[in-house]
Length: 143
Image (cartoon, rainbow, N blue to C red; front, side):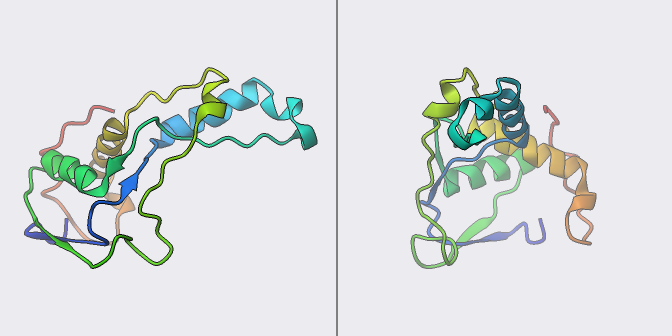
C-alpha cells in the first residue's frame, strides 16, 4: 500500500503456504468443543491441525491481492527459498483428523485471502498509523 510501484517480497515467491481464514479457524475450534473431542482423548486433550486441503505459492497470493487492489507493482524478491529466518518453504498440514469429525473449511485459500484483504481495506485503522485513503474504495466486500 505504501509503494504501489513495487513490492518487496521475502524469498523467491515459490514458497508454498496453506492459509486458513480466521472464521474457519474459530468454527473448527467450536466444532471440536461441541463434539467434546477432548473428553474422549487420553489426558483430556485433543490436538488437531487446521487448514484447507490445498496450498498456494506466495506469488499466487500476491497476484490475488494485487488483482483485488487493482495494482501492478514490480515484484522485488530477496534471495533464497525461505522468506525469513526459520521460515519453511512448504507448509501444508495433514488435516485428516479434524476432517474425520465432519469439519470442513467454508473458504478456499483464495477466498480467505480475498476476504481478509476486503476486511483490512474496510478497517484501515488496524494498519500502522499511515493513511491509505485510495485503498478500499476499489475493492468489493464479499465477506
